[in-house]
Length: 254
Image (cartoon, rainbow, N blue to C red; front, side):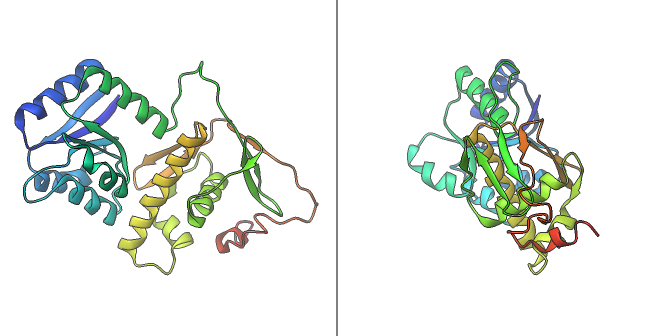
């Protein structure tokens, strides 16, 4: 059951989307707001899987609200709804998960469910799963389908290794920031962390590898679900992530 908030300034559309989501998909509406300002106050208090957000609203647009979430490191994926296609490029600049032309239909609800399943790394059991091949020692690498993974940013790759070495364990946000963003102002660091996790989930979607990054309390847990094959050391004296030079990795064995 996906926990979702709807922010829509037109009450009839708000009611319609709420009915469609709860009637045709595994969605639980945990917040309904006609005012983006009211929604912005409540979002940090709620445990959300996604936000269905109207683009065109008075005083604060959906794009501005989404940008505020990114800047404050609030890691809730956004699905924009609008009657105008020209907002698509702007929407994805603030890391939208999806873009829906309204009014929503039952088929769109199904597609949204599938999109969230891919984003969060969930797959029906009968669907074949791709795997990653990972070398952790010496000349470290991650491959998919025999090819090196093209990471969107260096910090995305670093955070992946960090989560992998803490697999199935809770990584507190503050500890992650201390290890990976030690010289960055805290608010900016939280924003960087959220953006990086977004990029990592998007990459897993593109690679079709159902690795899950769960948001738990004040941190994250990564579950690889046996979708990674670890390569053996090439040399006995190879060090952990030796070629990467991550400071936190040098302290791993301490």
